[in-house]
Length: 235
Image 1: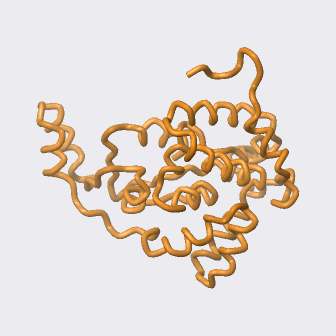
Image 2: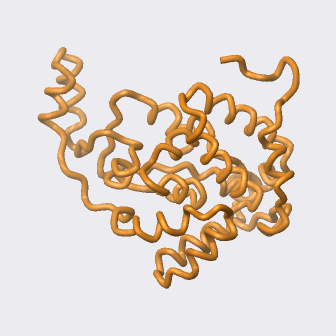
Image 3: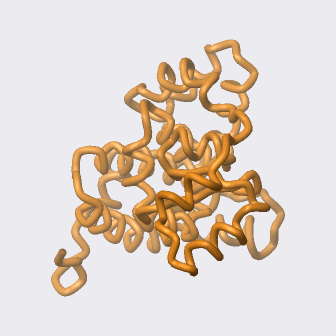
């Protein structure tokens, strides 16, 4: 989750097991997906990445494969044998062919219809409105989950994921993420989110602004503003 995705999901061979849970839950602490997370989520099929980015939902093996966050499913009981074969010099492709299996069905494939319909909306407010209007309990739950997150983080995250789709290579997205992350340090929501989720653990953050309509376009734009001379990445 979070940074764990950053050190694993950009690899050339990404393996999940039935125990895997993959998520970028930053909106829940008043932050924005980083470590290349917006690059990965922006490249997910349809609007699946937007759904995961805004809700912060954790997915299992099948859904991670569907979202292109992983490449292979290997049952956990076979990891030791796979590792031993690789250490002994077995060709990677052949070793994987011997140990990969089929993951148990996930949830996102059957929800793909309403996910793509709702999350292609232009704003977070409209996404939430569409989710409530679907008449599907899972869509309603997604809307309620989103509304519990930092309004500022939600709007910045939506913008960051959509900009990442247009930026191209990971290196360019990392520049954007570095800029957004540094600017997020000035946001009261990051401190409040960490307090509520990690320190006091009351799970009752007091976001500022408290609602989506209160977050303006200028508020969002400030997260993407240049950091100033000597602070910008040069990649």
